[in-house]
Structures are given as C-alpha cells and as structure tokens.
Length: 118
Image (cartoon, rainbow, N blue to C red; front, side, top):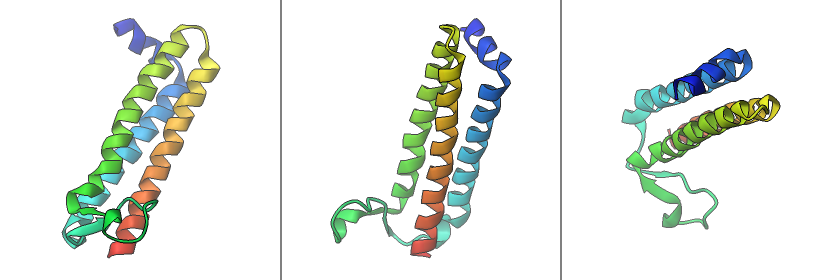
C-alpha cells in the first residue's frame, strides 16, 4: 500500500489535480457550514423530479452531494493509482482530471442551490 501511494506522489499532475479537488471539496463543506443557519428547513436538491414535495429534502440533505462526491473522489483516487501502477499514466491523469471537474461541478451545484434558497 505504501508503494501504491508513492507511485501516485511521483506524478505531479495526478497529485496536483487530486489535491486541488480535495481543496475544492473542503471549500464546499465550509461554504455549506458558513451558510447553514440561513438555509430553510426544506431545500430543493432533487431538481430532476417533478415539481412538488418530491424535490424537497430536509436541511441536512444539502450534504448529500458532498457525501456522494467524497465516495467518488476516494474511488477515483484508488482507481487512478491502480491504472498508474499498470503502466497507463495517461488514463490515470484523465481520471484525476475528471475528479477535478466533478468537484468543481459539485461546488457550483451547492452555490446555486444556496443562492436559490437564500
């Protein structure tokens, strides 16, 4: 396992992109915690559902995208490390970049949701 993380640390692109994704994840959590007192008791998180109560979730539901992204983040880090060890660094870098894209999209979703309900 130590060799696994040492291989990832060698590649500056994967390490940099993953660190930036993690920083954006932390910023998203702090943004939610900073605005948590201004969030109403029910918020629209499930925007793809028909209009009505199905779209709403309690205030703690604002953490659903964060939790899902955290699982995806961990999976992508492990997967890109496995691909890097199998002599496929380009695909590992692409997966790390997708991770960054997902973190930015998650941050934008949270910001738009908080602006919508505030």
